Length: 332
Ligand SMILES: Nc1ncnc2c1ncn2[C@@H]1O[C@H](COP(=O)(O)OP(=O)(O)OP(=O)(O)O)[C@@H](O)[C@H]1O
Ligand SMILES: [Mg+2]
Image (cartoon, rainbow, N blue to C red):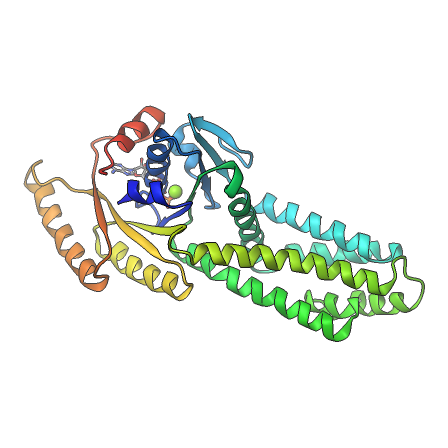
């Protein structure tokens, strides 16, 4: 099931509860696709990255070659948010009269602390990668953060599109930059000064300024809409939930499935990792029987979803050779 998804889709998200094996499964899937000749980009969106730990090497915010046909990347939320705000700040400074540059900086410094800023910046980066992915890579595999965080991220494109839409609508009504600034979240002197300044001696005529803001907002809206379209297109995108066959991961899987469904993201299948062997003593056989009961509950709650079981290994699949071996054993 995993291999089939890696062959047929352009974007795969690998998610699930903490510690169940998301990074390992994402890596094995990416390696399998790369071996078959697809150009793959493996991206970690988990702020607590463990892609580098699993690979036994440094992977940072710049694309790094991990194996033939396979590149890796760890998105850094802090740096992503900073780069994102720098870009918005630079655009605002260009649009605002020069004497208000200090106010723009103050506004941007406050934005840095806004709740959800990291997620929004991260999402913008994911949207960018999905856009570029169309040319640079055949398959993007996203190794995501534990469930709650990822479920929120998946619901975000819709909210962001709606937010940008609202800004455009307000801008169309007011045709005033100050209004847009207020929409950005600060109904104070920056907005008022901006309004005042546009009456005084604007560096840029108000109309052309409005047009440039409009085109900036439109670009973001298109980016989020594109991402939303990709996320909800089951031919192009699949979300794979990884779990271990225990009570809590099973419950969390059912919850994550419901959240993804609400966000319009299709779940391509379930991967049950670290399945205890039946033939390695009474202790593990007992665990295995218990696991089977939990999986029966899961199958009942989510009927019709493909379920792939991967065995618990004696050692940890860490480092390229061990990951390759794990990947080769992925059933077709
Ligand atoms: N099938 C397996 N057998 C034995 N060990 C495994 C197996 N799969 C993963 N592991 C080990 O379990 C640990 C957790 O795996 P991994 O880092 O892939 O999980 P994760 O879901 O990405 O965790 P986090 O939520 O912390 O990012 C790692 O040490 C990994 O080597
Ligand atoms: Mg991980």
